Length: 63
Image (tube, one colour):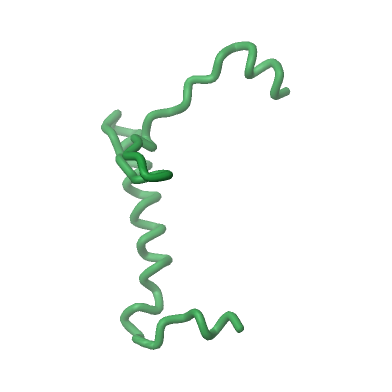
């Protein structure tokens, strides 16, 4: 059941949603101010604020 996965402590009930909002706001601010926003992804530290560079041919193929 889904309710079994929810924390019992009332202080923790909204913590996951709060962390997701915080992460989204940090990423938005980093992109707005052209500063890095680092996370650990697949065991590596990466800058998620850095937009992926897509070559012109990749854009054409994806359409």
